[in-house]
Amino acid sequence: KAGVTQTPRYLIKTRGQQVTLSCSPISGHRSVSWYQQTPGQGLQFLFEYFSETQRNKGNFPGRFSGRQFSNSRSEMNVSTLELGDSALYLCASSLSWTSGRNIYEQYFGPGTRLTVT
Amino acid sequence: SQQGEEDPQALSIQEGENATMNCSYKTSINNLQWYRQNSGRGLVHLILIRSNEREKHSGRLRVTLDTSKKSSSLLITASRAADTASYFCATALNQAGTALIFGKGTTLSVSS
Picture 1 (cartoon, rainbow over the protein chains, first blue to last red):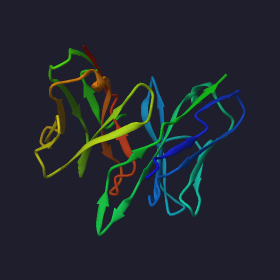
Picture 2: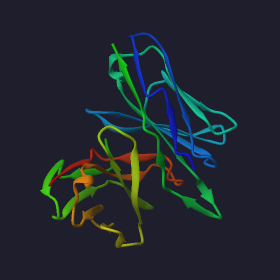
Picture 3: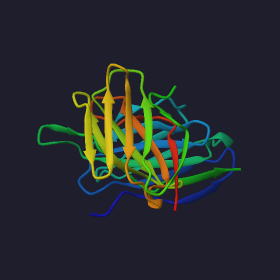
Picture 4: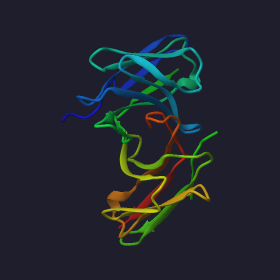
């Protein structure tokens, strides 16, 4: 099975611009979670989508948004970029639930490294 | 604040030695997971231990969980240079376990 893919891998944007990152989960996985990783704050949960619905949301401002499509692919958008948004953005997919039990393991993509100048 | 906190922040050992990393968390959990990250890449799931388990093994990995102390440890035996990476413990915000809270991580350096 192909792993989680994220595009683009690297991105340079200017303050005030907006950006859209894409994530394709492992085939059959319906849950997609997004995380931001910075040297100062570490790994922080952004949000999770399951069957096209946002199921959980972390403590980030409204400039951060996302969506999930019917094929489980997900995008996240950051509007009005700030210097502090420079980070590695990681997407993870999970089967979440099968055969009457939770599946907790998450499979991460390689990340998109966003630099805001 | 972070749910899980790893200790130590950095660890340097020689090949063949054992490496132990500790993690503390703050709230009740259903399970605790450990992940590895190689140099700014995606995370790889290593092992999951449920709240009713005290110890679990997977290859050279041994994880313990003490729910009374809200702590876990990851032991890597007979370390190899390829084990050089950052290691994170994670607990879940939600029942489904799809919203993880990670600690700051332990950076392990194994020299040959």
